Amino acid sequence: MRYPADLDATRLRVAIVVARFNHPITSRLLDGCEAELLRRGASPSDLHVAWVPGAFEIPQAARLLAQSARYDAIVTLGVVIRGGTPHFDYVCRAVTDGVREIVRDTDVPVGFGVLTTDDADQALARAGGGEGNKGAEAALAALEMARLRVALGKGPLGDAS
Ligand code: INI
Image (cartoon, rainbow, N blue to C red):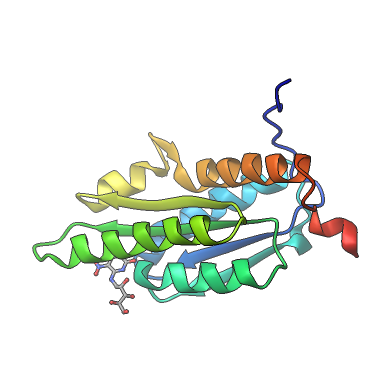
């Protein structure tokens, strides 16, 4: 048998963690993410948004949300732009490792919508510009994994209330 790729967001509860750093771009990722989830049947009241200072803080917020057992899926959104210092590499490493560890340590799906780019134009292109919207793509990935989890007997949490 095969588990179908199901992208129905009906009754799913989703937490979205979004970094304030590079806000003009992360807000576009958030718009794309929310629009995709609503288009797939999510209820606006089931989408909870947690703003954090920067990408470095994303894993801690996402972990707390995953551990709260309130969400069927989490989507992480941020923009890290390469500067002239090694800071870029440290922040990129921290956020990618941190999110990977949450996926490893909990069974809550986490969509990864953190852009790591050389400049703002590359990021804008991937935040609703010519290269699509990575916020929407991360939402779809989280959704597909949440539905797979539901098919395996977990949730959706919307059924509990
Ligand atoms: N945070 C980002 O989300 N993107 C960046 O490009 C970035 N740069 O370049 O520094 C960034 N730094 C802030 C960092 O995420 C933390 O918020 C900060 O260090 C406080 O802990």
